[in-house]
Length: 569
Picture 1 (cartoon, helix red, strand yellow):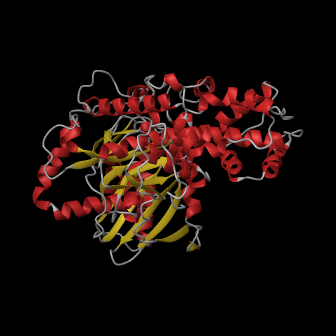
Picture 2: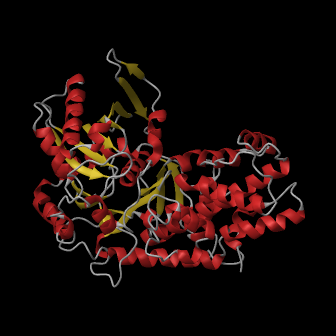
Picture 3: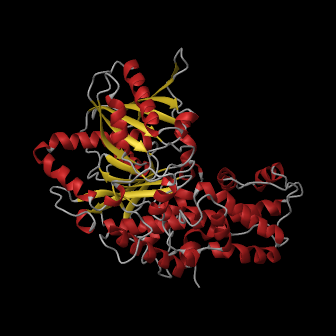
């Protein structure tokens, strides 16, 4: 059983300095199952590719755990888009209305206003929620002097949905703190448009409904024209990528002028049908059983921000039981994703020891600090490798000359080594492929507005073929016919969640609205307490390729990685 992929790429991070050899053996007996052998890496890759193909079929022989949802977005930014575009980002107790001023000659000008959704609206009648969104849109447009102006809008609706058109999405279930009545099973853009129609002066055209992965991909294309994959790596995990239309068997009909389209994979649920059970540890199974939705969102539970701290804690607890790690003097101690990132940031075990003592490990030693650092490293490496397996598969599948992965999310942003681990693993798993990773923040906000710009550009530049394009989009309605006439029964959320289970990523607590902390410049507080934020985004064309060398076959025993291959992030 070889582990060349891990050891030849990041083996230097798995060396002990002060822990005794006797303890090292016991530690590795607990942690080695998280260091995936090369044959398991290949099996995960093969399983993903099989699930991906199943998800694209019209009548698969068995149900895939990957939704492979058609977003109907056929292109990214060209760089010639110009005008004012709106975005509405609903995904938590706070939501945003955003105005983007796009000009090829200038940096992106973005004005944001935050609103809070009161609890009665989050739990009450659904149409009242959309009426509230329309009220806020009216308020925003009035304050900006835009009432009566025809403006295109991209709607980022960060809840599990079945997309049936470029501007149509059917809610499968509410998550987080939302549980509005009479919305599950209904088309949300239609409800939003109905609310807008009742507000004088709100002449808004909802041209697209998206999720955050698609928005991140679009934001990435603004930063770097080579972007072809968008990924969320934070509380949860998901990705979207460009797929060739001729490979999407379930998208029937003719699609003139469309060679590829963005597919929302929803890979947080990869493995919900049991295909990843072969690699799950006992602790992985415990974390799943302790979660809100058991046997759902299998893939992201192996590493995402919502779960990585709990995995580390359970591994540390097992080491305490093995008398390898000092006991904690506090019964209910915790370990979070932030603790993992902070631990990985430190090479000084003294700082880690201070953190341990603050959690109640009053008798902890420097040896204990190194053990904690090692466990965080092992779990982080597994997560980075799992994500890299899937990204490398997409890189090989798309077969583009040069690909940029646009990534957003708290885990990717704050973990000090995740990006470096991913760079090395992807290079090994997709030999000879040129790629780069970039941080593309706020796909759910600015990305949604940029999608609106792209769709508006398509409408104006292809007006002669508009009817054919719309007909090709509508051909997918038959495929999703089971959702078109959904009723709102007392058990509607359970029914629709079961229907979509294995195909929908959990967006619970997604990103904790961390975007707010990224927009601290140009703040103005109005007399009524409204916080206005104006953000200018650099028009930088993006980073150059991180490498050009081939690392040989990803299971080749002589594969090597040069530290000079990658530039710093």
